[in-house]
Image 1: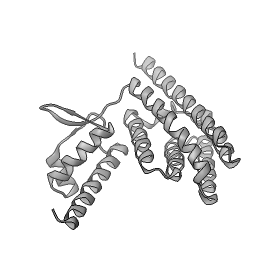
Image 2 (image 1 turned 90 degrees about the vertical axis):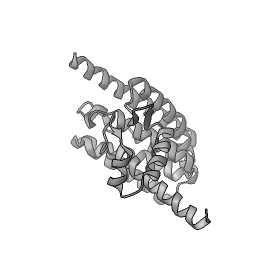
Image 3 (image 1 turned 30 degrees about the horizontal axis):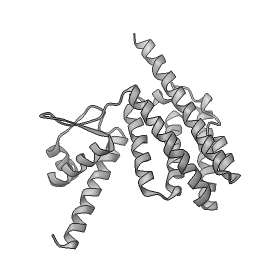
Length: 226
């Protein structure tokens, strides 16, 4: 295959992969949904081959599962999956915090402060949807500014897994937001002080508390469903 043709094919495959991943992240394709190749190809205006390649990549990412003789499905995560997810995030995002302190520009640090202000404003006003969106932007801003592409991809996929786990936005907060005010403040404080270890520790403790609150909400919801 000529080099120019190969580049076009790889670009097309990557584009389809990113579009499908985005659809899963935004829950436009619901957890448990079957991913029919022909239907997706028609929907995205492409041939089946880029869809097949995208589904393979999404399966490697842990976002799609393949069932022999039945096809591919958007993965439905369990509580145990969520525990593993937070374990991975703690390991990787603490390192991203260290790198952010070292590599982020003054403007990028100012943007992090702005995102934290938005988080606290949303939590104070009870705007759950905006809080969840800002929370993702806050964490991914740190990861992006760490400037390690593979690290960014892995962490981004773990955030998407978390979204897949949610049956509703309220699951992450239990419908309340006042307890979320200031949850990211220690991370920002340590970063602005230029303290890599303190920033990493603050991120690790933040994710421990986020996991605790998340699982407590799941437990409470299950009690009410009985």
